[in-house]
Length: 367
Image 1 (cartoon, rainbow, N blue to C red):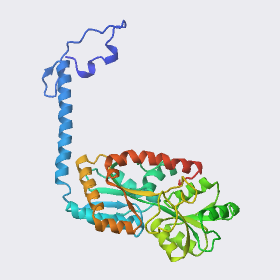
Image 2 (image 1 turned 135 degrees about the vertical axis):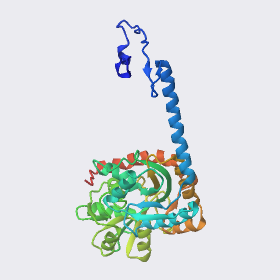
Image 3 (image 1 turned 180 degrees about the horizontal axis):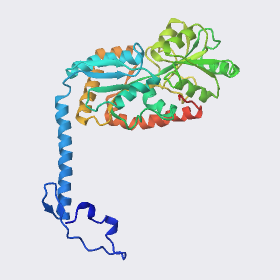
């Protein structure tokens, strides 16, 4: 009796004249040892595929019904105490209350967020490990590294976009410029000696300044630091000329007068420093550099679980107390229509491409 391996391949069933060779009458053993004809085997195979698909869908549904049955881990891919860490903890507490299980925050900071991101990308897709990512971990890094530790567009299950945080262009307090026009003129005149600092190569305080420098045609020396705290201290001390800071820390220092606020790099003014005009208002469009935050599961996490976490996320953002605390940090909560998994899935590839252009043009590499 012929076995499956003995049967000719599909491309061999031709007599060379465009006619099909006679159909074999050989019977093919079934899994139970009984013999079935090829047509019937095809029908059985289709039935088995549908059954398997149904079983997978059912298992995901059952898992979602029971989820969460134990604490969930939220990976923050940056050091404790930073803006994204603080905002993540505020949200995690409320989301845990809504889900009926605690959410444990774990900081895994290294390589501009890549290490923490890779940890989640490789985690079991069971709904018990998720990530708060941002523009740096999921857009910048795809162009900064020749071989990123993950593909941010395909290795994660998008949960939802949470917030946006504009950058603020600030300068040392004794720099002789009081607005964006004067600041650009100063940089053009001191291009060879001026320096700007950032929290590290590829960070959310680095790439926005690259975009700004490119827009005004200035080639300014970059001084990378290990975190935003140290670079801010050197800016306050007058050891560097400017930086593109997070709105939280930059606005606070500008209000205190320890640094000079030059422009908010966003389409609209920031509520926490309403008197400072945007870059667009001051005549320089196209340098808007809001950094967004979003939640991600590992790829393959069942969709019912994704939807359940997304609902908890959105409900937490609609809580007046949570919203107020996040806005006090300078974060802008995105509207409900931009919080869906589908929106984030379509938004992310566009963001990767948007930031790839200035990164490649400036020849920046974090390798």
